[in-house]
Image 1 (cartoon, each protein chain N blue to C red):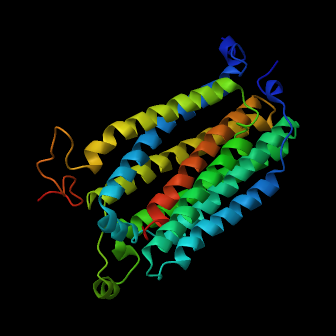
Image 2 (image 1 turned 90 degrees about the vertical axis):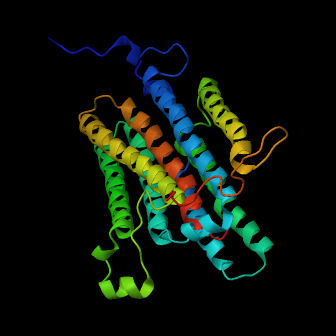
Length: 122
Length: 210
């Protein structure tokens, strides 16, 4: 049995999924543009977070589920992906205190603010 | 000497054909590569809010939007190629794979314009406009933001190029009805490349208001 015969499954309506992805793309482009000149910071941050990042997660989920066929894929693949995502989150959780904080219970970043130079050092 | 396909290609101990499982392993390792890079970027971005927001405002949102549209469309084509290969419509599968490759080509052309317009603004603007608008050359060493930008989008671009080359080889075989399972395998890889861009796009192009 070939690999291909081994993975026969019903195909969803790809055209419909593609159109939804395009609509979401338009939302993610024009959402932040619409609030660009609004002074209320809370509104701006909320709209940008939703239209840019929440929509990005929805798009990614759609691509993974229906284009990559993760919805019908074997559980071992889900396990594989979950392990790697977990590794990434452990890295994030482990490193972020050093990057985002300038002091902790038993340590202090001697350079405090500007510990990470945004411009190259002269 | 005749060439024989290794038995591991079709062996199916995990319930997932070995070829496809191999692609999933590649995707898994890529999650750590791109995930680590994007996680690091996010941490620095939160640390340098306003300063990096200004830098993010210099990226070309229209180039990013066009490239997102192109990659989504190419993802749609490659999934149609997979469907056609499954139905043994070889010519159709071949056509869709080449349309996907064309999508990758357009993506790289836009990327080329974007990179060169940042690094060599004198290619696109007259000296007068450069002086009036204060346009400066931006490279990977300009700041940490741009180091992340060029590194992440550069690594992503290399993945697009690699995918295009592999797809061209697969298209050649698919036309003859050989190794049709590889159409799905390259599709999984291409969708992942699209997926990475789905996250790069808001981070580098549309979150400048944050």
